[in-house]
Each structure stands twice: as C-alpha cells, then as structure tokens.
Image (cartoon, rainbow, N blue to C red; front, side, top):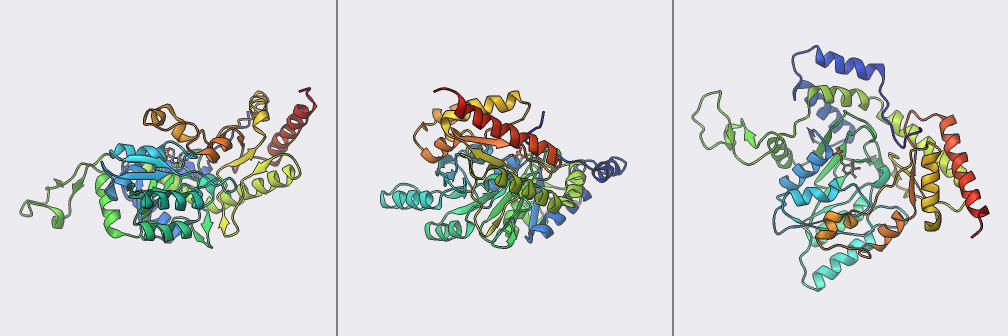
Length: 389
Ligand SMILES: *Cc1c(COP(=O)(O)O)cnc(C)c1O
C-alpha cells in the first residue's frame, strides 16, 4: 500500500527522543521550552504555546479570545471537524463560509458577502473567524485582516497543514494578520511530535492565558493571585483550565523534525510539481496556488468529474493506493446537521467533495512510487472513457 501520507523519522529523531528518556524530565520541561523557542524563531513570532494536539490548541485559542455562549465562530466546511468543534467546546455557535473553487480555501467573496448580509439584516456578526490553510496554502490573510478590522472580529489561523509555508514572502505563523495561529504535529502533517500542536501569537497576554489554561488554570505568578502572602509552595487556580500539556518526549521529536522542515516542504513541492506536469491536459483539476504563497503541500488533491469519482476512488484503493477525501463537508456531518445545517448550505464545498481525491504525498515517497500512482490514475481515467455508457 502506498499511503496518502506518512511520517519520516530519522536516526537523529530517534536519538533525540531517547536522550529525553534517559534524562530528568518526561513531562513538560526544558525540551518543550526549546521546541517553543525554535518554532517561534522559525515563524518570526514572539510567543509559542506547545500543547498535546492542534485540537487542544484551537480550544485554548478560542478560550483565550473569550469565546463563549452567545458568540458565533465562523470557519469553512472544507476542513477537519476540529476547526469547528473548538467553538462548540466553549458553548458558542458555529457557522460556515463557503470555499473558493480554485484555491479550496475560504472564499473572500463569500466571506464579505456573508458579513455584509449579517450587518444589513441586523444579524449577529462572528466574534472569531477560523480560516484554514487548506493543503498547506495560506488563505488570503491580508484580505481577511481588512474585513476583521471592518467588522470587528478576531482571527485564529488553522495552519494545521501549513507549517513551513510562506505568504507574501513571510512565514505562515508570524501572525501579522491574525491574533493566534495554530499548528498540528500529528504524524500525517508536515512535521510530527507523535501527537502535538502549538499556538503562536504576538500578544503576550494571549500567550500567558493559553499557558495557564493548558495547565488547569493554575498560576504561580504573584501578580495574578488573590493571596499574595503565602509561602513559596503556594499556587492558585484562578480559572478553569485543562491538562493539555505536551511531554518533553514529544517535544524532542518535534524539535528534531523542525531541522528537516524546509527539506520536507521542498520535497513535497517537487512531488506536487511532478503530479501537476503529469496531469496536464487531462480531465483533472488541481488546487490553484496563489502567486504570493508557497504551500507546505500537506495534501495533493485532484478533482475528477463527479460521475467518475466513486469508480476512481475505489479502483485506486483496490490498486493499493491509499487515496482519501479531504474533506467531507463538516456542516454535513450528522452532528452539525442536527444543529440545523444541511445540503445546499455551502454549494462549492459540497460540489468539491463529490470530485476530490487526495493522492499520496509525503517526503519519503519515491519517484518510482509516484510513477505508479500517476500511471494508475491515467489508466483508470482512460478505462472509464472506454466503458460503454
Ligand atoms: C489535523 C487537523 C486538526 C487537528 O489536529 P490534531 O493535532 O490531530 O488535533 C485541526 N485542523 C485541521 C485543518 C487539521 O488538518
């Protein structure tokens, strides 16, 4: 089986993890600090908060921005469910903005129209927007930032696919167009810590709040305490937090992987370019990458005519090629349908999902493996045309 994604673990990665196992700290300790420092240096952002998953990072980001009952959070349907669920954890409502058919990211046109509609009909505006950098390509963050100022919402970038990407020549994660940006280090993502995530921000107060919330809402900072007289052993829980800490074992893997991030992204882009060239002239659409973005290429998605989708998908799986769908529209998940969403709500994302197939793409994929995938796709497309109607 050629999987759609796979981690790449080196001897250096293994040695880094083993060295933590031989040391003093297993839970959150100095290696978590080092990983946070390294990611914030890489992204050119002031603060980083490591946690046990991107899902946790999204939850903390919403909490730090005071998302709660009465708030509405907007995201896209073409994402993993976690981008929407984080708002539900906080008791907020979720709403969905349709995607752009070319970039497969949030449509700026649909977003501005929806905002305008809300304002003119006196309907509540979102307090937080969560754009998703689909497949590793940044959304048009400059345009989103303009709308954020105009309509007064805050922005969390879901960059789960996009560490190592750039936008307008600067790293995704520098937060110059957002309040908080989050990354995932799940094994299928660009770099991994086993499980893990990180929230980055330029706002010291948000960083401090997320650090407190990842560890039960406990503070050891005298300035934040009610009782300032107690001894050195004293700590206070001043709000309700969770245990979302990353371990030093995970951080060691993540930190070591960060050394190869640029190499991983380069290889992903090389493979993507080879796919692009191979499919030119065929009845296949691919994700449009905007001119001022360098994608981390977490995913390589082809779109085929809806009538051929099921055939191609099952035949590729039968040929041991681990294709996938990214994503079945979140608003059509049974949980979200029970909240009132249904078919027809985001037509572009729904049409896309009837046509999309994610092909294998990961740094360890060989040219020979990719050639098998390309040939199989081509043969199957031809055989479909050859079949009688
Ligand atoms: C993977 C992913 C997440 C969740 O990441 P975890 O680290 O597995 O919690 C959130 N959003 C998107 C877009 C993802 O792809």
